[in-house]
Image (cartoon, rainbow, N blue to C red):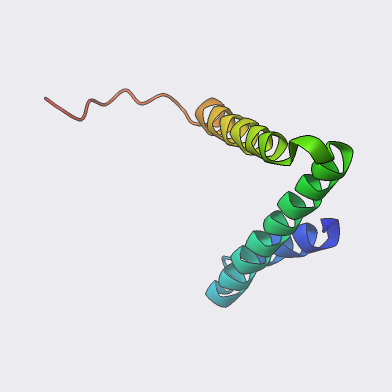
Length: 84
């Protein structure tokens, strides 16, 4: 999976020269991330076979929270108001 992630970012980095490589890079990135999810969930369910649904549910909750917090931390605060 690591090789697919590196390959996808290398393709995405070619955006100034090729829109098609951007599309390919995003597609490969999506497949790689899905593969990482499947691999992680397999490891978790193998470690806790009696609690598969709660383990997978917890994994996705914390993955989503981490994604949201990362996006919030990486975004500059807006000084503009939407309603005047």
